[in-house]
Amino acid sequence: MMENKNYSKILSQIAEAATVAGRKPEEVRLVGVTKYFTGTEEVEALYAAGCRDFAENRLQVFQEKADKLRTLHDTEETAFRWHFIGPLQKNKARKILQNADVIHSGESLDVLQALDRISAELNLRREILVEINLGGEQNKHGFSPAEFRAAFPEIQVFTHLKIVGLMGMTSLDADETQAHRQFATLRQLRDEFLPGGELSMGMSDDFPIAIVEGATMVRIGSALFE
Image 1 (cartoon, rainbow, N blue to C red):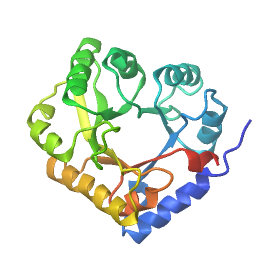
Image 2 (image 1 turned 30 degrees about the vertical axis):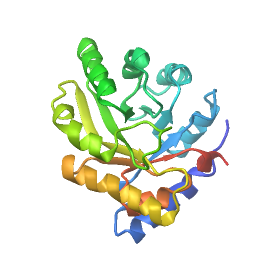
Image 3 (image 1 turned 90 degrees about the vertical axis):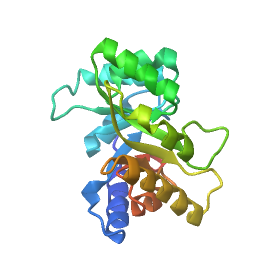
Image 4 (image 1 turned 180 degrees about the vertical axis):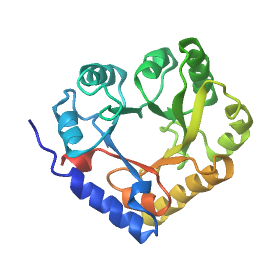
């Protein structure tokens, strides 16, 4: 079986960043992004190292991995916790809801309304993170901060979605100062509208900054497998 030697190193870096920020390391959950691989060997190696949260961004690959691994680890103590982090097409929402424990891509009011309606049909109540486009980039999904503020009265009355927090990424050209500012914007929105909620922010290149700014989930992919 493969071995993942980077998992403990990343956990140490998370603990260090949390300590610098005056936070407890256990306040930050590491979500292993395994979208780079079509098979399950890398997922199982990460699982053996101690990871329990895994993220995918393509439905077909996600479903294949979930189906294969669900039968191997199906008790509450050993179960995988699956996160969907890709763009959410409404025609695929039903299958994503059936397989994902947490969806990070609540990117628009239309998408959230579709998720709520289908969740009612399936009698499910999944955890949903509302995606915020922090850098205002045209090629990225998500609400602008202003759009989120305007839409929140409708978002908070969904009956079959559990809105647990916010997700965001810094703009591609963000330097360290800009990354701090953009992550702080997400934290401030969370504090205003969903106090105590999750903050899914920070990836392999910028997760220490995200942790300083309050991240509760960091989505780590390449750093785990390089």
